[in-house]
Length: 356
Image (cartoon, rainbow, N blue to C red; front, side, top):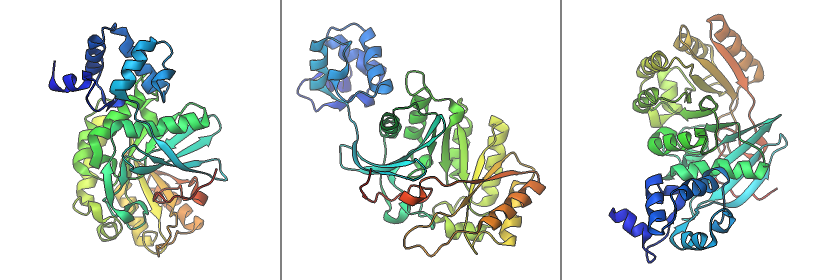
């Protein structure tokens, strides 16, 4: 038995979060407790599918086993510090983990669907000029279970199945690659949330080495790249955290990504008045996208308190749609959900404003 397993089965050891256990570790613990191996699958269903908050909830386990598990393990969990409801039906949550670190996530219902926007880090180190999250810097990366638990919290609050997840909340997912991928796989797994791979989207600022790594993963996860300008000088000013990844190299990497996966990536483009909505910026965007497999999501900049940046006009957004269409690139103007509660793209900053 490994030293980790010995620690796990010792009654005097500090309890570990059951979310962090591998199937092998759980089986070893059950063997130590002289329990049949099928109990592992029962426990995992309670943890990952039913989102149990107490071992006492696990009613198909013997009471003696529930008591032993509660001595040796914890169920992690998140505390809801604040929740706000938007006029459009979206809800923003401020969730706190056991170590006191907090993040925000958003639930966005639409007809019979529920999309969830989750955070992969507490804070962000990328420093994008139009984003509130990066203002305070990075606190820490989240574990895969902490990413997953945000989805489960929203699911349980809406009491409905989550149909899609976007990793577009706080943080740069590709600076927390392993945990992000593990969370994606658990969200996709029938032994987890059971969400189709193509309905699981990762948004990156353009971390090229991880884009190439992502291209080699076997699953059909969706990729979105925050572009925001196809002019190097403008992009450097707006997105200093990815300055070392030039647009030329990003263009080549995205070409390789499409060739390897056959999937169409999305470029996110927040229209900022007088900054990236000029004619020269529009032409550069058309040049960047023309002849490639891509979809452009145009977003009216969501205003952030203290920022001098202002959104472009709806009319200008339509100019972009038409110009991109002329070069064979599909573009849509995306509605920003939850802007009235600072829950839209770029607005998440862990502000505690209570409201239900």
